[in-house]
Amino acid sequence: MLWVDGVPKVVVPDLIMNLELDTGEPITTEILRYGQRVAVIGLPAHPLMKTPEALEVVGPKAFGYPELTFTPLNAAKAA
Image 1: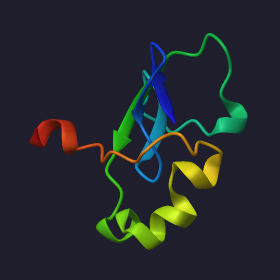
Image 2: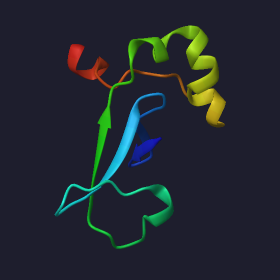
Image 3: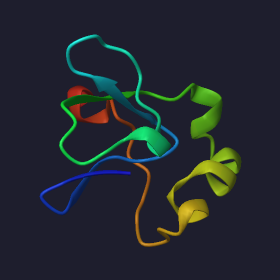
């Protein structure tokens, strides 16, 4: 999950990626450190990952967030 000011902005199964700000190289979670300059980007998941059946396995509830409803990353642009 990507939270901004206490509000979820990107929710699984959409992808959240951390990139090194100067080079654009990916930074995996295990090497992410406080003070690193990063860009965080989100990409929409494949449509098959957004089906009700898939969301049971890869949606917010599967990661311990039963109170969150998946809202596709690109839904805000469509509204």
